[in-house]
Image (cartoon, rainbow, N blue to C red; front, side):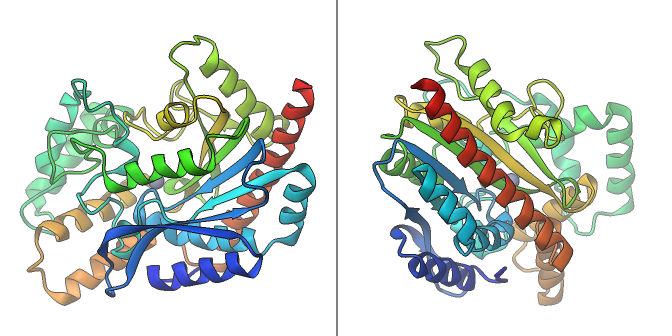
Length: 372
Ligand SMILES: [Zn+2]
């Protein structure tokens, strides 16, 4: 179920979707993948496409994280109890397999333009958010040689220790538009994946009255634990909209305290405060829909290990002349940083996602009843 290439993952997803007679829609990426394969944002719609209640499950925002996301999506497509429950509740399932198929295929976290897709949803007509703190880290994160020499290693350890982990995490991962060769680069215009996701929302979600949206990520938090990170959905004309979406997220996904919902707005999340995240698209593209959104973030390895893998992989991108053996080792470490390929971890991520999907269906069901 969990494939180790994008081409295999895509074929398995399409086969599983067709097996249950899902309606398939594909947006084809302009580039091809690592094996010369077509790249696409594939969407499977299960149920009445005009239903007022929709449940969107998306994954592969951060390319390489799609190896986990794809396996989860296929498990859900094969889960008859879930499909029956959605059908009974009148909830249409919209499964978006790979938001960033380029990064998925090439085992990168970023898009074809080195953009961290979940920092790219900015208003590019306005001055972009400034992340001055990133400047302090960039030259140490991206040394000329890899592995970093002793001077760089000592300097970066000292910088992390002097600034403290929360500051360092926010500086490095918060998003930046000044270093196109750096980490968590927001880009300076919308990427293909940004525009395609917006199209997906307009085509498949905007006519819903209620939308529950779970976006699967990996690489942050304790191994195998799924952190439910709430994304506030803000209507700029309605001051209470964010608070209401927060309240719904807690009610639907909090499991009465058993599966707490966190937020990077109030410091309860393992994620730093980020700019340009995709939550903003929900209201922009679906203004007549009440959207409740969260990221489901599965832990793999400790934060600094994951960051080290990302630095190495970014260095490799800038140094294509690296020996084949080093190339393979760096790519394997990148894969391991975002996908723990053990039976236990695969089971943990699948079960927690299925639980969250069931909770979403119940939430959509109850909200609809309450409104009557
Ligand atoms: Zn992610």
